[in-house]
Structures are given as structure tokens and as C-alpha cells.
Figure 1 (cartoon, rainbow, N blue to C red):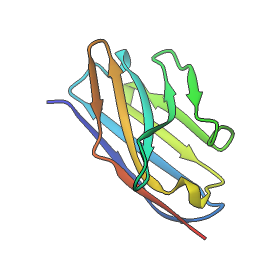
Figure 2: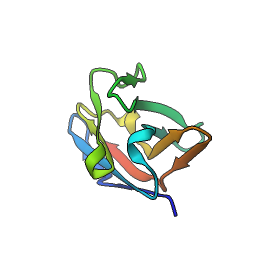
Figure 3: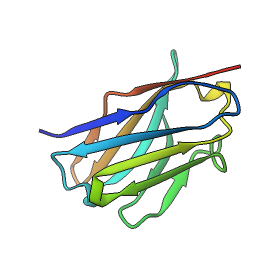
Length: 115
């Protein structure tokens, strides 16, 4: 059974940092594009960052320069380092694995940035 499990969300103050983790099981992790998405209440889920099997990254304009996505294929884990957090970053963050003919999602982890 495929599972993606996010962790390390929480409450932080604006300007602070947080590092999210997502551990995958049941898939050949290294064969997947993996990424982070977020969804705030009343909004559509949006791409935050993604990283290819080879390490090529893409970021949403709103987070570029503040967030860093990385992956450790040996640990089947993708990370999102979030710095200089803003209240606008408050959302449920989901990890995602996208391969040929299959897309998987984690359950989401809440990130709340307070002022």
C-alpha cells in the first residue's frame, strides 16, 4: 500500500522557519517527481515546489527565495525548508509523488504562521 506521511507542521511566528518532511513507502520513490502543495480554506490547492528525480527544482513565485525543496532518495523522503515565513503561508501542506500513470498524496499537515 502506498503511503505518503507528512510531519513537522505546526505553529510559528512570522519571520520564523519550519522544515516539513514527507516519508514515502510502497513506491519506487526515486522514480517519481515529488512536490509540495498547499491549500488554505476557500482556495484551490496550489503548487508550492517540486523536484525531479535528478534534482531539478521549481518554485511558486510566492515562495521563491524563501523555501527550499530537497529529497533524499535513500530515505524515501522529501523536505521543504521554509524560511522567512509570512502569515500568507498559512495553509495545509500536502506532499505529492507523481510518476507514470500514478499520482499519490499525503494526508496534509497544518502550517500556521502567526503575527
